[in-house]
Length: 92
Image (cartoon, rainbow, N blue to C red; front, side):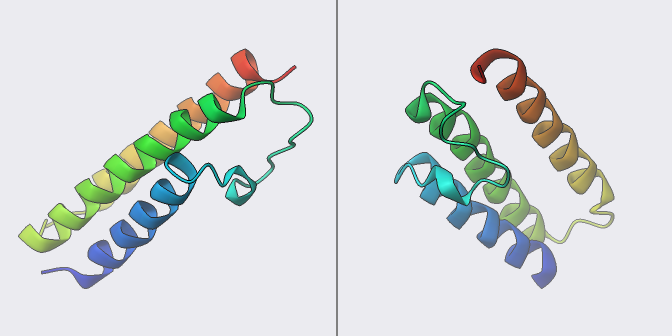
């Protein structure tokens, strides 16, 4: 069991739940409330993938993945795609 992955996954799950379910968009870095038209859509769009990635990290940590670098690379790709999509489609 890799406790580091479990810890990172737990943090991502908590952050994803706080943003996705509780709509605490102020937790997002660089969030400017005046520039985003639909805050609920932003919260769902960012929160639920973070929650899913956190669950994947926790499961991978429990199973004991040999090389977690691919997980972190996937996390970076997902976050970059989300940042680009939000800045292109949702920011005025």
